[in-house]
Image 1 (cartoon, rainbow, N blue to C red):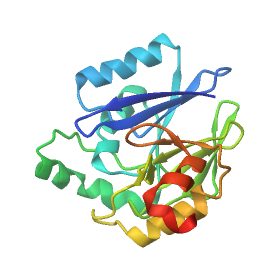
Image 2 (image 1 turned 90 degrees about the horizontal axis):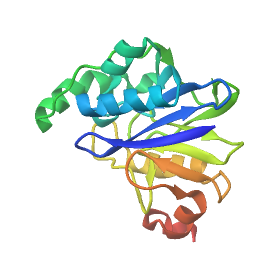
Image 3 (image 1 turned 90 degrees about the vertical axis):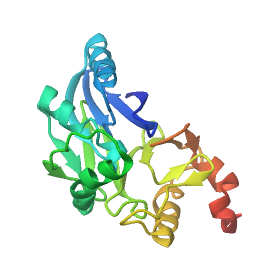
Length: 215
């Protein structure tokens, strides 16, 4: 499986394209495209690589991760997958955009529900869904066990964790689920977050200041 990261919108969110080299099927994870320039960057990439979009998958639905949903879904006519506990995040997004003075084309509601333990398919490739709430109530991550990497959204960053002071956040819950669902992965698992650079399970166990109690 191939993976490409884009950094989009005023909040510098990481949008990912995943694709199967054999089938050329692809999925966009957290469509953060904010303006026409970023939309065209995505369109050109998909065209140049001869990719066939089959879905948007959302790790969660904070506004910076859904700016591009309306455009992408209208353009490619694909379904949107999200954990149902994050529906309130979509419903709250218009008000959040107004508070931050951001342009926002309201995201459609999801077509399909994500759930813990689910297996998702892109061509011949499989990923596991793991539920990791705390930053957002319906936050999930996507794990590629064969290639040892995961898209972890805003749960865990290089040297930090997702903020928990937004509506629906829960600090203790986030720490507990990171330990349970991410730190149970092998140390050499690469982690691709929703902001900033990639890291690994082993690096965060050893250096992340929020988990000193594990050392």
